[in-house]
Image (cartoon, rainbow, N blue to C red):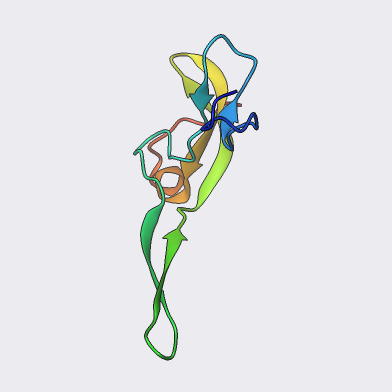
Length: 85
């Protein structure tokens, strides 16, 4: 192993499949993902934080077949996806 390779698995990367692919937490319908900003303490010191969207894993119809995908609650409420029965 080289100096830059630690031999540990990377977080969020699935091994074992033919190629490495990252699993992203984004809405299947609108593509909404996490937003980034700052936490502000009383002394106004800024530390980075994430604003995660409200994603639900639901069974929806994707090109005629049911699949489990992450969909944000705004798309569910607006009826932008067709839930599988």
